Image 1 (spheres, rainbow, N blue to C red):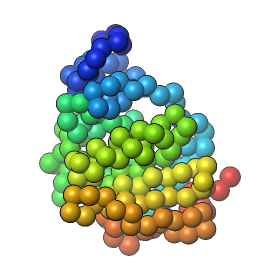
Image 2: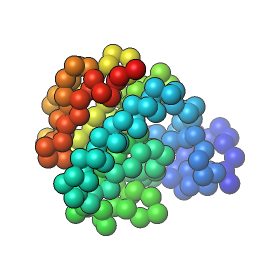
Image 3: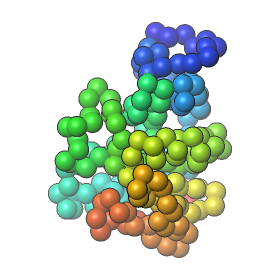
Image 4: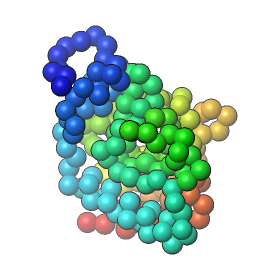
Length: 185
């Protein structure tokens, strides 16, 4: 087991020595610790996963849908635990090993005060670099969502939806979810 000590640069190998369930992500070779999410964050996550799973089951989609914690190794200096990730059925065998190795097709991050900087800046840039096709950022405070789509290797803001609107996925054809249902108290 790795004892977390001040080190200049950590690697995926160091990360894998951590105790299972340790509250860390490896972001740009730094071990970043965060406390467990607040209840609202988890409630939003469950609602999104339920909506996605219900839809995927209704169309007999055999893609891979999971929520955190699930390691996603993008390179030797970046192992993330996105809140929600989806991998299409045709890509499952390609990137699912002992952990996810490579870019999922869709990632959803739910902002918290402790992680917003990483989700909006560093992780977003790395998801873009490694080819995550669709990146959705859910903001529980502003009660809105932004869907970034990858085009020619760069993200563009495809849709920004407010609480009263639907957010529609590009990766999961015909899937959308009502933000009012996701944010209800």
